Image 1 (cartoon, rainbow, N blue to C red):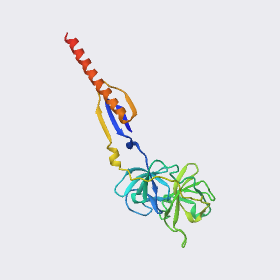
Image 2: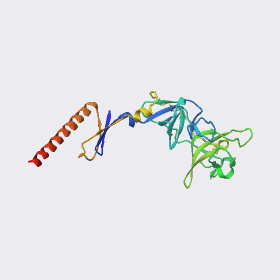
Image 3: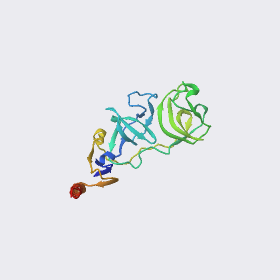
Image 4: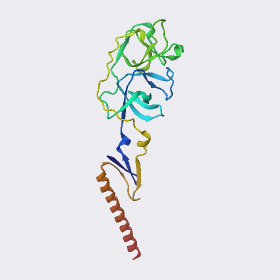
Length: 250
């Protein structure tokens, strides 16, 4: 299938693959959504761990090691070796509707980073005890607030007067919704070549008298038909010009 785009006296033929949406499955544990496409595995460069068996939307090839991706309403990067491209769009691409409760003082600070080192400057919001309006996105390793306890923090959204995003210390949270694997069956394929799909555009000039915008979806036989019409239009236009010139001369 080929898209015909006609705009400002130019006709462009664009492969349908240019408009494709690509998804990839998260194949392993410990796969992270990175803030930048560099191999730095600490919280300064990581949003959270992505849930295995779910998906990310691929938006670009950042470099040889990373894809640029969308996950829910987050834009970040994921290592290419950790995901596998699929055919089509999954029915349930993302882990959603996961919530939990805060039940103790040490987990009431919603912070911009999974540590208290920056003090009050990293505090995003103060969560009331026993709050359940917290949406879970993933985990990350950070500071251990209590000796001998966990260093895991939750990245989450706290909804109050508005939505706040940040980290809470997981050790004093409970009632986390059960997280299940995504067992959706998909067909795997090779990773997209974004550079190639971006170059599948051809432009042809039209008669200078043409105006307007026409967008259509054409098969190969229809393209042949379009070229025949364009050729005929050009011939007729040339004949009209010649006739007008002869009348003027007369």
